[in-house]
Image (cartoon, rainbow, N blue to C red):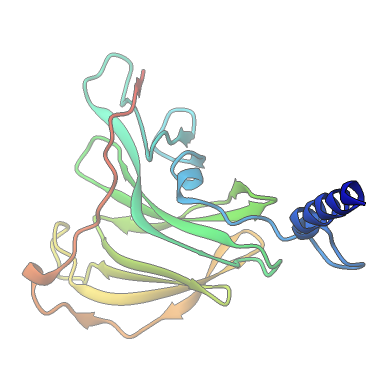
Length: 207
């Protein structure tokens, strides 16, 4: 009798452990959420690298701007990302802002959609946000992505954008589609503006 009781307990325990993997008829499996580690160690399209791709390792990719050159092309994952359902399939996708420094005077930012495919990232076409803009936040809710950003007014020098706007996007068949923006306003003071942060661990340079 004791052996029967133990066997029953073990069977119930196994069933409880497997319950998350048991689906009701017609129920679709829900993939696990994408992690920031996956986003920081993924391959992204890049117009600045020779291969057209940048494989981030610990949030960074580096290569020589030209064979034998000391100048580098650097692509980084910033701290600005958000998780949520982009394509309406019930799985938690993600968006992340990348910073690209091709070795000249410009520093370029892109908003990248990353779909969740059974827990693995599928990177889609990046959306350029601009040169030397300042990103202050990213949110993803109900399929809409809001990007809080300082962009340049016609009179701004390239170093110092002053228009504080929130850009809104949703995912279309070929990438992000603009849903407009909140009214622009002039930033109160350059001293209060928030500069984009990025992870800067050492990564191998590819020549």
